[in-house]
Amino acid sequence: MKRILVFVGIFFLFISCIEPQVEKSEKPNIVWLVSEDNSKHFLKMYDQNGASMPNVEALAKKGIIFNNAFSNAPVCSVARSTIISGCYAPRVGAQYHRRMQLAPMPDGLKMFPEYLREAGYYTTNNSKEDYNFITSDSVWDESSREATYKNRKSGQPFFHVQNYGTTHEGQLHFTKAQMDSTDLVTPQEKVPIFPYHPDTPLYRFTNAYYRDLHQKVDTQIGKFMNQMEDDGLMENTIIFYYGDHGGVLPRSKGYVYESGLHVPMVVYIPEKWKHLSPEKTGNRTDAFVQFIDLAPTVLNLAGLKIPEQFDGNPFLGKEVTIENLNNRNTTFGYADRFDEKYDLVRSLRKGKYKYIRNYQPFNVDALFNFYRYKMLAYKEWQQLFEDGKLNKEQDQFFKARTPEALYDLEKDPHEVHNLVADPSYNSTLKELRSNLQDQVKSMPDLSFYPEPYFLEAGLSSPVAFGQQNKSEISELVTIADLSLKPFDQSKAAIEKALKSDNPWKKYWGMIVCSSFGKEAYPFFKIAAKLSKNDRNNLVRLRAVEFLTLHGQDVPSDLILEIIKNAKSETETNLILNSIALLKTVRPGFKLNIPKTMFPSDWVNQEGDLVSRRADFINRDH
Image (cartoon, rainbow, N blue to C red; front, side, top):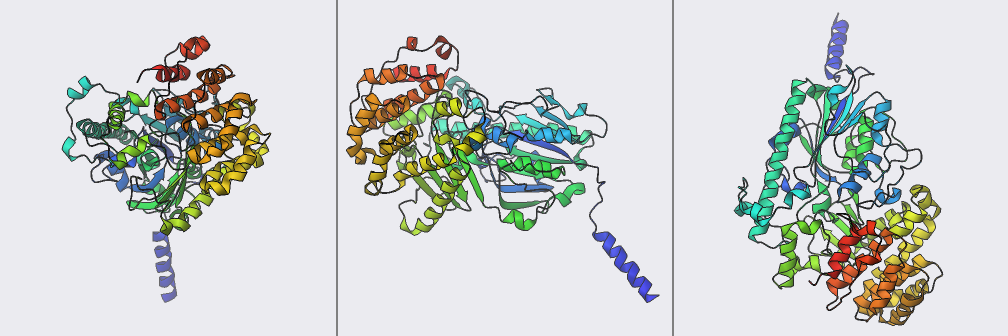
């Protein structure tokens, strides 16, 4: 009898420990609530001076707050292309915003909602896509401002994306009159001003108004959550809230600083599905998650196979352990062209340390961008710089950068104190530099070819093109990294690159010369020859850029000739970007560019990038 009682006791103890049973055929609904252009710095759940978002905070009480969630790119189309593909954008040709042409998805890979549809999910998106890829008709059952999960079949699981544009950059394009007539909820005197921003009434208003917009988004989210509650869906739906990248005050959107990449993220997990989370609900986790991880995570939650072509890894779902989650401490970021403004920046964060590689450090952060400078805060910052009224931290935005930067984010969360020259951080610098070099070479990173050449030679199959040219891309990265050594140690390798038959080695050799500045004066003669005679138009451009940036006079006729020789709108825009830079940083540089030298369809429509650049170059101030 005792044996029977013991057995019964053990049996009931075992039963009490079993997780709620889920039918094998049953799958969770999955919802994404996505706010645009907002980094984690503006939410109270991350910063005591942030906006209160009670509806998001209520989700967090039955879910997980991710302290370290990151977009891989600081702008919409590239971030969303990363999410929908599960791939690093510079590996698959989707890294430019706005795209000049759409890239195909990698061979054998589909946008991840298509896998959900094949598994029986109803997939809906309301409503922003903004992908740099050619989109199949099989991705969404509905994708529009009217898209809703309610049109699914009875009992059919769904994946729904609800986008909120209330915090988008465009909301800060207010006029002085609109500013003066706006009543704020957030007290201006209580908002913190980032150390790189000027503390002015305009910046205080912009900060406060931006926090008010967060509260409006939260109200919209609350209405959506109430609808889900009324529909009886909360107990069978896993809900993600996140920002689609950082932003949007100056030096955030478009830049790989934490303000551009570090996003808020909360995942609500109902009791029925808590076995799919390695972390207990109601907790915060310091685990690093990136946008490349979102696609595999959703497929994993749905119990589906994860394609091998994905670059990311799931952070929820089957076989994800707490040990696996806690070991995640690295994220990779990338910034290329934003509208008419070119740059090439990569970042790697590991734990509290952030490494930034500026491959073209002479491209100042403040270089004019038409859409960005519609914001009064950008205009005021520029004027204060010209008037000499900024301190050292605020000035940095308008000055040439160092080729690499290292930040301790615990001591310097706003990335204004570069530690590269501090010998006590040398081992960390070498480690993160090496890790980033391995990252860009292993992908390989297609941005080491200039965009017009990539579009011509590699866009039809970007991944295959990258693999076919992987060794050459690695060589180009090695040339680019000559700027990280003392000039005397790099001089011979630079000369070899400049005398190469390979145009892209010469191209990068000239960029390295510009990075060294006047120290590279021994190459002025070679640069002058290349600027006049090289067969590659972009090599000529980079030679002109090097010479002009560092005090050498180049005839206007030569620059205009290079512009005329451009074979495409993309090549023209790249050339004009360098000329815009020269106008910005070289005192006295002037060039008049007649718009009649361009095809009419490049300059006659609102938003034409070539037209924007030409207007900036031609204006008096």
